[in-house]
Amino acid sequence: MTDKITIFDTTLRDGEQSPGYSMNTPEKMYLASQLEKLRVDVLEAGFPSSSEGDFEAVQMIARKIRGMEVAALARTSKEDIDAAWGAIRETANPRIHIFIATSDIHLQHKLRMDRNQVVNEAVEAIRYASQFTNNIEFSAEDGSRTDRNFLCRIFEAAISAGATTVNLPDTVGYAIPDEFSDLIAYIRSHTPGIGKATLSVHCHNDLGLATANTLAGIHAGARQVEVTVNGIGERAGNTSLEEVVMALHTRRNYLPYFTTVNTREIYPSSHLLAMITGIPVQPNKAIVGANAFAHEAGIHQNGVLKNKTTYEIMEPATIGLETNRIVLGKHSGRHAFRDRLRRFGYDLSEGDIDRLFMRFKELADKRKEIVDEDLEVLVAEEILRVPDTYELKYLNVISGTATVPTATVQLEIAGKLEQKAGFGVGPIDATYNTIAKMTGTGSKLLRFSIDSLTGGTDAQGSVTVRLEEEGVQTLGKGNDPDIIVASAKAYINGLNRLEYMKKNQSLTRKERP
Image (cartoon, rainbow, N blue to C red; front, side):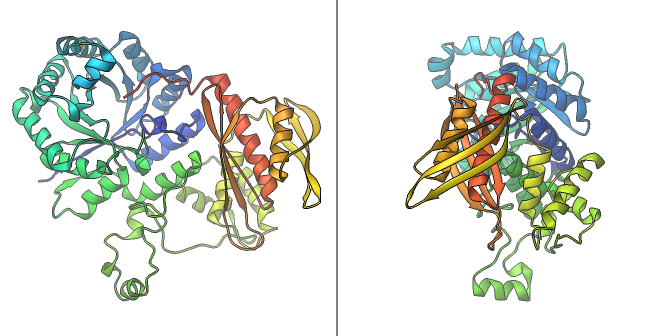
């Protein structure tokens, strides 16, 4: 009989901590609903004590999600635990996830505590949390660099205090698979009471070994793995959910374990995350990258045409990637339109479908064919948008070799129309200078990138910007056949998000593992 591996998804907590992946509450709700369809076992919804915005997002997710456990992160303080419980108490199966650092490096330089103090803090925190729920996870931050005997000691104390899951994080991605496997085997054989709790692993990818270490951990006896969609997370990221799940699914002959993940929702989940954050998956990313099931070399093409198994070890349909293609255009109906959106992970209301379908028809009358990226633009503009403080009403740009680039911009600002002109070294610079002057923004432009979403002379251009103001960073996206208009839309979208985040303080973070 094979063992089940519990899938603990921390995309909305650890994943969202990574630069560029911050999400607002509606975006988190969409992703949480998709993760429920993916059927992960535990959803770590956030770190409620880090900010009021994070608390509210976790609380909203906990109130809606019923198909899986919802976890909230907390340090060992009562205030953190109270916030965590307050956010998740209404969910069907709440879990409080308590952590404290255990390596000598962290004890000396960060906590300034000795080992006895750390054990006492952990035990007191777990006992305090036990009055709220008996579903408690304890994590030994920087566990892979912790003295192994001390790990056994603190895990024993945590289990005795009431922890039902003990987690070994490779917080800085330092471990090597054989070393990590040996450490887990040592913990299992030298920790009294270890059989009363689930042993979990949480690996980072600093050396590119997160998935390898996680699989080594499973082989050595870990039965919960902490992962993120697309492997996002601090620095080089976390263990990739899709890589672990599909490794177990594909190599059952060597890894006799199973998960209850609905693998056909893997690609929609990956695609939805990339859509929400505006950060695409690298083409050569395992499982979900654009090239994962693509073949260009003649030898490969010849082999695949004769028998797919020559170069494909997985069926694309297994992860929800359809091999057939339905062309969307002006003659397409609502059914095909709704079906394509569902493939992306959007389970929208009839009202949202009606609104999007009208916009889709307007675009289809102008274009020969509507591609997936066009639909992403519609969803981003109509469904996942934040309240607009600024709205572009008019843009005219004069530029060339014999004139000073000049932009005339009309904005609706808090319901009032304003118009100004400005100059720059180029048409986009002139546009941004004028918008900045009109909005009075003090933000810095950290990133500006242009991509073509489609081919042909009527291609949709996509612009992504990253803005920063007062320590708050946000992403802005704009799409239009006119790249200057797309640039203006991206900048204004970023400014709107910036205003929203500053007002809601959703990015005010405290220390997290």
